Image 1 (cartoon, rainbow, N blue to C red):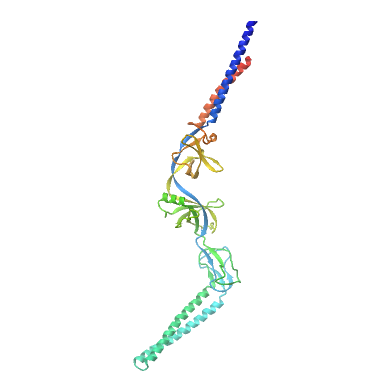
Image 2 (cartoon, rainbow, N blue to C red):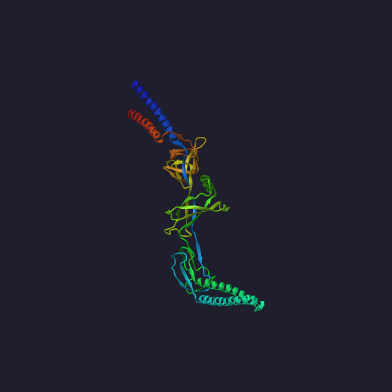
Length: 403
């Protein structure tokens, strides 16, 4: 009986000892698991470069190449209008008529005065020819000849004056027919038929040329310097694309053909201009949008895989490994893509080491474990944990059955 009690006690103490060992092993494995989970596995790669065509973005405004205010150049009542608002007109096309009768009369009077002056001039030309012959034969005094010569010269001057008056009257008469000075699209009629107009009345309407159109944009001085560095000349003609404020891209490309001669001190920008074809009259004077101007030559730019980037409210970012081999959150600015890589113009440079996979568990400034393949590393961890779990559960079932 006593011998059985000792055996039972020995078994109980042995089971308690095994239970303590299994508990310690479980705690140790749990700690290792937590430590492993606290140090995420990542893969890294160095930032490389690619030869790409640079592009620069800027706000833009559409402007007519010609913007002409149509004015009355004489006084009178507006009697006719020969177009509708919004019509496209050609240079020289008749737009308005100002009551012409007064100017017809003035032109007729000027023509009569001119004809009279010419008749007087012709008379004295003939008289001068006669007196010249008479004075040469001493039939008249020299003073009489000089008097006829003076009369002839006076009427000659009067003819010139009357010719100028007649041309001026004809010019005023022509102003009664108001014509378009340029090709373009007519705007709102500001003065309607029946109103009295004068040179001080303001514009009758406005005409904007429609094809081609100008688009002006303020480019930052640093971007302007970059363009000049890449292309090697400030006078290069560059391709420009325009996007409407709605987000729709304009179908035709323009050519940047002008830049201002100064940097605006208040904004740090230089005004540039591109000329765009506008055959379908889609571009309208005063419209706003954005442009992209492209360099003529390629430039070496940093590239990062799109899969290595993440995004929050502040923009795209990557994790760059610092001098202590810890990840640092770094925001980047991109300008398009090459294949599956972002082209970066700010944030990282060639040779920087960035995390390419496993970013989801990374904490900036906290250590990471660099591996060759995050997926394979996670599989190995999972297998080890599964083996330990199965063994430990088996021991527990055995011990549980004995107890």
